[in-house]
Length: 133
Image (cartoon, rainbow, N blue to C red; front, side, top):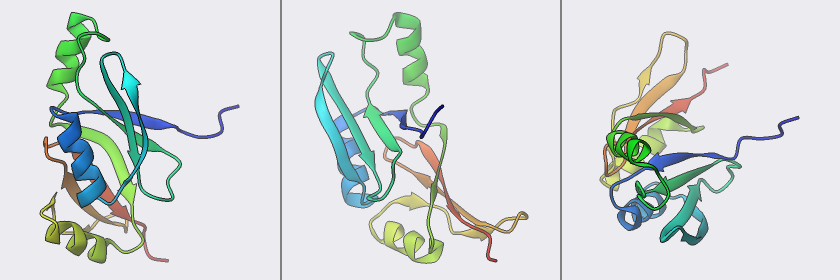
């Protein structure tokens, strides 16, 4: 039986710059940083998260041409990944003060509060606060 979700790969144009963003702006920990097919495999995550984001540049040593092209096209799109916060307003203010591209939190029809966060490449993440109750 599956016990947990490990993580998801996020394609970026500049791995070093992206990792700096996730560590310094988003406050994520660097969980893994090891050599990988001529580059590095780097995983970042919020302090208490089991799941990680693997920050990766499209890699011609690892990917066939069609996969490489798809990976490049996926930079700057909605990732389908969401982050949870218990205090969306203070998280919004903190990220905004650090220069992060984030939308103002808005209450949703289903009761939660949501913002959209972009990294330096324009990859979009959803920031959610649970419905009150």
